[in-house]
Length: 239
Image 1 (spheres, rainbow, N blue to C red):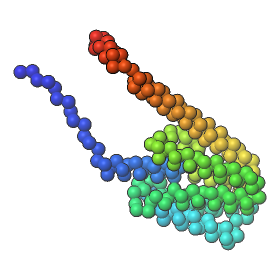
Image 2 (image 1 turned 120 degrees about the horizontal axis):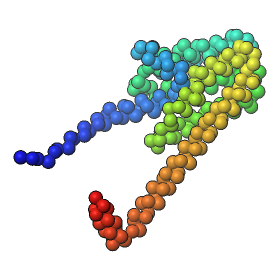
Image 3 (image 1 turned 90 degrees about the vertical axis):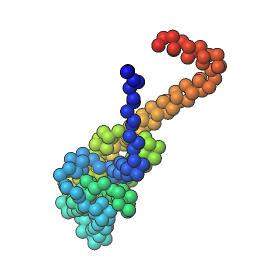
Image 4 (image 1 turned 180 degrees about the horizontal axis):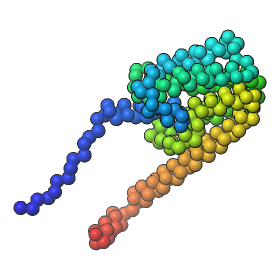
Protein backbone atom coordinates (compact mmCIF):
# COMPACT_ATOMS: atom_id res chain seq x y z
CA UNK A 1 0.00 0.00 0.00
CA UNK A 2 1.44 3.38 -1.05
CA UNK A 3 0.85 6.12 1.44
CA UNK A 4 1.33 9.86 1.28
CA UNK A 5 4.77 10.76 2.68
CA UNK A 6 4.44 12.59 5.95
CA UNK A 7 6.15 15.97 6.17
CA UNK A 8 8.61 16.13 9.00
CA UNK A 9 7.45 18.45 11.73
CA UNK A 10 9.66 21.49 12.19
CA UNK A 11 10.74 21.70 15.83
CA UNK A 12 9.35 24.74 17.59
CA UNK A 13 12.15 26.93 18.93
CA UNK A 14 12.23 27.41 22.67
CA UNK A 15 11.00 31.00 23.33
CA UNK A 16 13.34 31.46 26.28
CA UNK A 17 16.32 30.19 24.30
CA UNK A 18 15.43 32.50 21.42
CA UNK A 19 15.14 35.46 23.80
CA UNK A 20 18.56 34.70 25.26
CA UNK A 21 20.07 34.40 21.80
CA UNK A 22 18.68 37.76 20.69
CA UNK A 23 19.74 39.45 23.93
CA UNK A 24 23.28 38.17 23.55
CA UNK A 25 23.44 39.23 19.90
CA UNK A 26 22.18 42.71 20.71
CA UNK A 27 24.56 43.34 23.59
CA UNK A 28 27.52 42.05 21.59
CA UNK A 29 26.55 44.39 18.75
CA UNK A 30 26.24 47.31 21.18
CA UNK A 31 29.75 46.57 22.51
CA UNK A 32 31.13 47.24 19.02
CA UNK A 33 33.99 44.76 19.33
CA UNK A 34 36.44 44.91 16.45
CA UNK A 35 38.76 42.40 14.76
CA UNK A 36 41.25 42.27 17.64
CA UNK A 37 38.59 41.49 20.26
CA UNK A 38 36.97 38.86 18.05
CA UNK A 39 40.32 37.25 17.27
CA UNK A 40 41.15 36.93 20.98
CA UNK A 41 37.66 35.87 22.13
CA UNK A 42 38.27 32.19 21.45
CA UNK A 43 41.62 32.23 23.25
CA UNK A 44 40.56 33.81 26.53
CA UNK A 45 38.62 30.91 28.00
CA UNK A 46 35.48 31.80 29.92
CA UNK A 47 36.56 35.42 30.33
CA UNK A 48 35.98 38.02 33.01
CA UNK A 49 32.57 39.29 34.18
CA UNK A 50 31.76 42.06 31.69
CA UNK A 51 30.22 44.60 34.06
CA UNK A 52 33.03 44.35 36.60
CA UNK A 53 35.76 44.59 33.95
CA UNK A 54 34.32 47.60 32.14
CA UNK A 55 33.38 49.41 35.36
CA UNK A 56 36.88 49.03 36.82
CA UNK A 57 38.40 50.21 33.53
CA UNK A 58 36.17 53.30 33.52
CA UNK A 59 37.01 54.12 37.15
CA UNK A 60 40.75 53.71 36.58
CA UNK A 61 40.73 55.98 33.55
CA UNK A 62 38.82 58.56 35.58
CA UNK A 63 41.40 58.17 38.38
CA UNK A 64 44.24 58.80 35.92
CA UNK A 65 42.53 62.02 34.82
CA UNK A 66 41.87 63.24 38.36
CA UNK A 67 45.40 62.37 39.51
CA UNK A 68 46.90 64.34 36.62
CA UNK A 69 49.21 61.52 35.51
CA UNK A 70 48.35 61.96 31.83
CA UNK A 71 51.05 64.13 30.34
CA UNK A 72 52.38 64.33 26.77
CA UNK A 73 54.51 61.30 25.96
CA UNK A 74 54.37 57.52 26.22
CA UNK A 75 52.40 57.73 29.49
CA UNK A 76 49.32 58.50 27.36
CA UNK A 77 49.24 54.82 26.49
CA UNK A 78 48.41 54.04 30.13
CA UNK A 79 44.60 54.47 29.96
CA UNK A 80 44.50 52.57 26.65
CA UNK A 81 46.50 49.61 27.95
CA UNK A 82 44.45 49.58 31.16
CA UNK A 83 41.16 49.49 29.26
CA UNK A 84 42.39 46.79 26.88
CA UNK A 85 43.66 44.56 29.68
CA UNK A 86 40.42 44.82 31.65
CA UNK A 87 37.79 44.81 28.88
CA UNK A 88 39.21 42.47 26.24
CA UNK A 89 38.92 39.44 28.59
CA UNK A 90 35.17 40.14 28.92
CA UNK A 91 34.59 39.46 25.21
CA UNK A 92 33.89 35.69 25.46
CA UNK A 93 31.07 36.07 28.01
CA UNK A 94 27.46 35.53 26.87
CA UNK A 95 26.23 38.76 28.57
CA UNK A 96 23.16 37.07 30.03
CA UNK A 97 23.69 38.19 33.61
CA UNK A 98 21.14 40.36 35.38
CA UNK A 99 23.25 43.51 35.04
CA UNK A 100 25.18 42.67 31.88
CA UNK A 101 23.03 45.14 29.92
CA UNK A 102 25.19 47.80 31.62
CA UNK A 103 28.29 46.62 29.76
CA UNK A 104 27.78 48.54 26.47
CA UNK A 105 27.14 51.97 28.08
CA UNK A 106 30.03 51.47 30.50
CA UNK A 107 32.31 50.45 27.64
CA UNK A 108 31.23 53.42 25.52
CA UNK A 109 31.83 55.75 28.48
CA UNK A 110 35.31 54.28 29.00
CA UNK A 111 36.09 54.67 25.30
CA UNK A 112 34.88 58.27 25.13
CA UNK A 113 36.59 59.27 28.39
CA UNK A 114 39.86 57.75 27.20
CA UNK A 115 39.62 59.54 23.84
CA UNK A 116 38.90 62.89 25.45
CA UNK A 117 41.49 62.53 28.22
CA UNK A 118 44.26 61.60 25.80
CA UNK A 119 43.23 64.29 23.34
CA UNK A 120 43.21 67.05 25.93
CA UNK A 121 46.51 65.91 27.44
CA UNK A 122 48.11 65.88 23.98
CA UNK A 123 46.62 69.29 23.14
CA UNK A 124 44.62 67.97 20.18
CA UNK A 125 41.96 70.27 18.67
CA UNK A 126 38.85 70.06 20.81
CA UNK A 127 36.53 70.29 17.81
CA UNK A 128 38.24 67.23 16.30
CA UNK A 129 37.68 65.27 19.50
CA UNK A 130 34.03 66.32 19.48
CA UNK A 131 33.56 65.17 15.88
CA UNK A 132 35.19 61.81 16.60
CA UNK A 133 33.00 61.21 19.64
CA UNK A 134 29.95 62.25 17.62
CA UNK A 135 30.78 59.86 14.77
CA UNK A 136 31.27 56.88 17.08
CA UNK A 137 28.17 57.87 19.04
CA UNK A 138 26.13 58.02 15.85
CA UNK A 139 27.33 54.55 14.90
CA UNK A 140 26.25 53.27 18.32
CA UNK A 141 22.82 54.91 18.03
CA UNK A 142 22.36 53.56 14.50
CA UNK A 143 23.23 50.05 15.67
CA UNK A 144 20.81 50.21 18.60
CA UNK A 145 17.97 51.59 16.47
CA UNK A 146 18.47 49.01 13.74
CA UNK A 147 18.53 46.04 16.09
CA UNK A 148 15.38 47.34 17.81
CA UNK A 149 13.73 47.08 14.39
CA UNK A 150 15.20 43.58 13.92
CA UNK A 151 17.50 44.96 11.21
CA UNK A 152 21.02 43.80 11.91
CA UNK A 153 24.01 45.74 10.54
CA UNK A 154 26.37 43.57 8.48
CA UNK A 155 29.26 42.04 10.40
CA UNK A 156 31.86 43.66 8.16
CA UNK A 157 30.87 47.12 9.45
CA UNK A 158 32.11 46.29 12.95
CA UNK A 159 35.40 44.97 11.57
CA UNK A 160 35.87 47.88 9.18
CA UNK A 161 34.99 50.27 12.02
CA UNK A 162 38.01 48.84 13.89
CA UNK A 163 36.08 48.31 17.11
CA UNK A 164 36.59 50.19 20.34
CA UNK A 165 39.88 48.39 21.02
CA UNK A 166 41.71 49.31 17.81
CA UNK A 167 40.33 52.85 17.83
CA UNK A 168 41.77 53.39 21.31
CA UNK A 169 45.04 51.68 20.41
CA UNK A 170 45.51 53.89 17.33
CA UNK A 171 44.79 57.02 19.37
CA UNK A 172 47.12 55.95 22.19
CA UNK A 173 50.02 55.16 19.86
CA UNK A 174 49.50 58.42 17.97
CA UNK A 175 49.54 60.39 21.22
CA UNK A 176 52.64 58.57 22.51
CA UNK A 177 54.48 59.38 19.28
CA UNK A 178 53.40 63.03 19.33
CA UNK A 179 51.34 62.84 16.13
CA UNK A 180 47.86 62.65 17.61
CA UNK A 181 46.26 65.48 15.62
CA UNK A 182 46.90 64.01 12.14
CA UNK A 183 46.00 60.54 13.44
CA UNK A 184 42.70 61.87 14.81
CA UNK A 185 41.98 63.68 11.54
CA UNK A 186 42.52 60.57 9.41
CA UNK A 187 40.67 58.27 11.83
CA UNK A 188 37.69 60.63 12.13
CA UNK A 189 37.40 61.13 8.36
CA UNK A 190 37.63 57.39 7.73
CA UNK A 191 35.00 56.48 10.32
CA UNK A 192 32.69 59.29 9.19
CA UNK A 193 32.71 58.12 5.57
CA UNK A 194 32.38 54.45 6.54
CA UNK A 195 29.50 54.79 9.02
CA UNK A 196 27.61 57.50 7.12
CA UNK A 197 27.74 55.81 3.71
CA UNK A 198 26.89 52.35 5.08
CA UNK A 199 24.02 53.66 7.21
CA UNK A 200 22.47 55.80 4.47
CA UNK A 201 22.71 53.11 1.78
CA UNK A 202 21.22 50.50 4.13
CA UNK A 203 18.25 52.68 5.07
CA UNK A 204 17.65 53.69 1.43
CA UNK A 205 17.70 50.03 0.42
CA UNK A 206 15.25 49.21 3.21
CA UNK A 207 12.92 52.06 2.21
CA UNK A 208 12.88 50.86 -1.39
CA UNK A 209 12.11 47.29 -0.31
CA UNK A 210 9.32 48.50 2.01
CA UNK A 211 7.84 50.71 -0.73
CA UNK A 212 7.90 47.82 -3.21
CA UNK A 213 6.25 45.49 -0.71
CA UNK A 214 3.58 48.10 0.00
CA UNK A 215 2.92 48.63 -3.70
CA UNK A 216 2.58 44.89 -4.26
CA UNK A 217 0.15 44.58 -1.34
CA UNK A 218 -1.91 47.52 -2.59
CA UNK A 219 -2.05 46.03 -6.06
CA UNK A 220 -3.31 42.74 -4.63
CA UNK A 221 -6.02 44.56 -2.67
CA UNK A 222 -7.16 46.52 -5.72
CA UNK A 223 -7.47 43.46 -7.94
CA UNK A 224 -11.09 42.40 -8.55
CA UNK A 225 -12.28 38.91 -7.57
CA UNK A 226 -12.57 38.05 -11.29
CA UNK A 227 -8.93 39.07 -11.89
CA UNK A 228 -7.76 37.05 -8.90
CA UNK A 229 -9.74 34.01 -10.11
CA UNK A 230 -8.36 34.38 -13.64
CA UNK A 231 -4.82 34.70 -12.32
CA UNK A 232 -5.22 31.66 -10.09
CA UNK A 233 -6.70 29.65 -12.98
CA UNK A 234 -3.83 30.65 -15.25
CA UNK A 235 -1.25 29.62 -12.67
CA UNK A 236 -3.06 26.31 -12.18
CA UNK A 237 -3.04 25.69 -15.95
CA UNK A 238 0.68 26.40 -16.12
CA UNK A 239 1.25 23.95 -13.27
